[in-house]
Length: 148
Image (cartoon, rainbow, N blue to C red; front, side):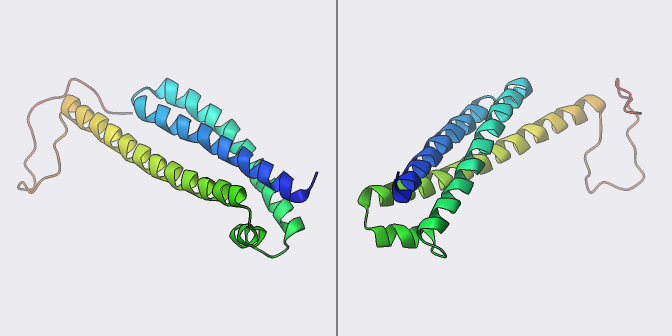
């Protein structure tokens, strides 16, 4: 098998692995408030990430064997292969899409945690930090004991 063909196959593998990660990111968005489902998704995601790391290492090794010192973009441009160029562009687009989805999931998770903290503060009758006069404390008692 030619090195160029092997490199194309590795790039296609990376694209399919990124598709799986995008599916997991979408699934995490819909199950953001279900910790057990998120844990299962993250475990599956870790396996795919491990495979992606191996594919990335193989891609770098093949690229170094084909075009030592060249970047992937430079080699693709020099190879003048439209299908390979499309696969590499798709790879970059999927990486950007996955980064965007992960950032959105992080924001959703932060909002969910803020909501939980807000509800705990209500239940525990914690006073929010405000510009009230110092030294004035609430006289009500909480039904939960926060001592650890």
